[in-house]
Length: 538
Image (tube, rainbow, N blue to C red; front, top):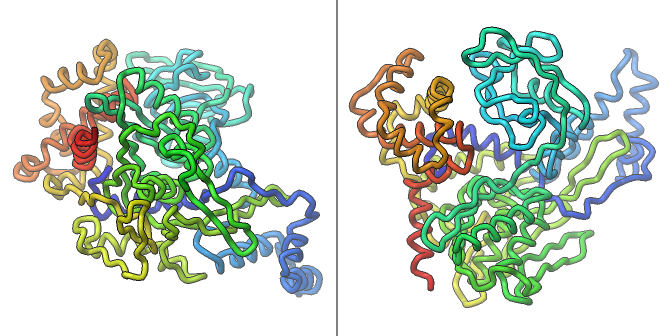
């Protein structure tokens, strides 16, 4: 999404930092299997003094101490003195962190949202355990394993811990369904749930396929190939790849995707480090889209593997990059699994785009706060709104395959800058977006009209039907009950965005992402520019 106010930028920035912590991990993740203990690892890394001090504290200190906690704290502090992307992952967090990059996890197969202190099922994953048991979108989960599970203490983390678990294990659910007085009882057997990387793939214009990729995980390349095949069968000959807000992930997945577009022998990326021999990736010439026009969309939250993809397309003059300067992460991590179940994701190399540029933005070791504030500083400096706000030193100039000038030292600079579109933003819209009232009303509307809406099978038909409904009037009344007084002037300015967002959310609640994105993106300036640009390419 390219329309953000200050609070939204803060929210998404926190999310992107979490995403970046996952790292740009190579497929051949190194593992330290032969180390006897965590202290042994510290010693092997030249930290004998740390091990000695911890041993002295453990055996000699006047009071009892929790040496394990101290060890954990020492490691966290040690790693924090390195670059911003090296990270220590405690054993308790490793499974959840790894699942973000894996192709699946074990669970019951629902997407949920917490509203009014209750778990609301937004959608049921097709073919998953919950669908097989008869759970429906709109159901409220009020009991888990015969225990009431509602109230102020319900969080996303607690819900996931309760609903996820090993495959073939069972969880008992108590469900309240709209129009049914009693609590319905279900026993769901957990199963493997796919984690999709491709949000949507559809024909956005004649002969033009649009593919939105949200991350680079283990299944991303295969999902991407399936999307290409499906779009080609529908007549696609050109492609728009949307990597906005994609914080990266597995480097090999990005390399494989770029390979689909580049002629044989062209350089995709190379990486090297102090103890990491130079590694090059080149196209093998077997790609399915070598001659297909391509446009890539990026923004300030596109990072890591997203930048590898965009950089390879740009440096080889293979397509057009549209949007805003990307995040600027040019470091490669490898995961080292430690003997106690924790892991160290250590930066081992820098990667370089085909022209030889490092797009890693500057950082000072041990000063993570300055690094993390970079995105906010860009926002405050006006970079999201004005291309001229971006200042790049001449020393960071590089040349593409055809001699065009590109820049390193802090992200991928797009070929076509597209500012945020804030012309229809108002304080009223900001407030109802920030507090989630648009989404809450859309869910309420869907829940109340689910039987009727379920008969509508396409987003075009849904759009047509919702255009006959008094959504704006009803929504402003709903927002007023939440404490947001209607402001006629501001609502008039923002009404197109409000109505379109409501339509998109209602459609997602009934038809999923395949209905949501075509509605949501139809007024997106960056998407419009991409369609305009690619339509000129023969």
